[in-house]
Image (cartoon, rainbow, N blue to C red; front, side, top):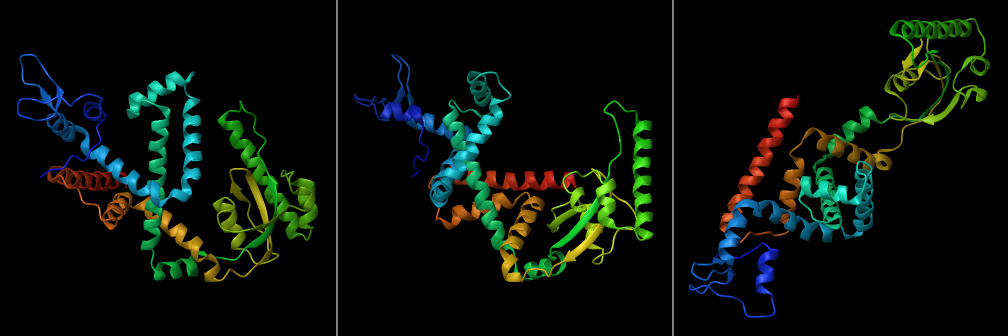
Length: 333
C-alpha cells in the first residue's frame, strides 16, 4: 500500500484543524467539497502534487534529514555562508522587498529564512561531495602527486620593471611602453652580467616598493603563491642564479634571483593537503560526482522510498541528472 511521504501544507491544514475532518461520499478525507459536485480528496491532491513536484521536494527533504544531522558541527559555518550569500544578493536590489520578490520568482521561496535554509542545504551537499571525493583518492594517486608536484619552499628576490602606461593610452602607446620596460629589464640583466650587485640594483630600479629597500627579497614561497610564469622561472634557477631573460607577469617584467631552497616536507605532513587537492580536481573534472556522492549517502543511510511511483520517479530523475551533466561536460570539452 502506498504511503504518503510529502508533508503538504494544504493537506496539513485540512487534517489538523480544530473541527472534524470533512469526508467525501466514498469515505476519503476531503480538501474541497461542493454542494452538488463530488469534492476533491486529500489523495487526489497528493497524487497531483506528487506527479508535478514530488521528486524535487522529496530529495530536498531527504537530504535535509541526513545532512543537517551529519554536519551539525558545521551549522554555524553554513549559517554564516548563507548570510554572506544573501548580503551579496541584496546589493543588486534597492530593498529587501525587491530581493524577496526575486527569490520568490527564481527559487520559489516565500521568505528569506526559507531561502537561507536552501543555501545551507546546498552547502552541506558540497561538504558531502568533498568527503565522498576524498574517499575515492588512492594511495597510488597520492604518492604520484607527492613525487611529481610537491616541492620544497624557496626564497627569491626580484627587480620589477613596470610599463608606464596611462589609463587613456592607445594600443600603440601601450606596446611602446611594454617594449621600453622590457628593454630596461634587459639592461639591468646586463649590469648583473657585468658583476653589479643584485640587491643594490633592486634598491635603485625596482618598482616594487614593498621590498625594493630590502634588495627585492620576497621571502619564502611555494607553488601556487605566485603567478605561474614567475614561480616556474624561480624554481628552475639554481641558488644564487638569476634569470637571464626578463620574466613577464601581469605586474610587468621581473629579474628573479633564487637565494635559498628547502627540502620538501615529508609525505605524512602534506598527505591531507594532497588529498584535498586531488579531491577538488576530481570534483572539477567529474560533474556527476555530486550526484553519485549524494545517491550513495542516501543508500548508506538505509533510505527506502515506500511509494513505488515515487521510487520510479526518483530513479528516472537521478538518471536524467547523470545524462544531463555528462552531456554538458562533453559539449564543453
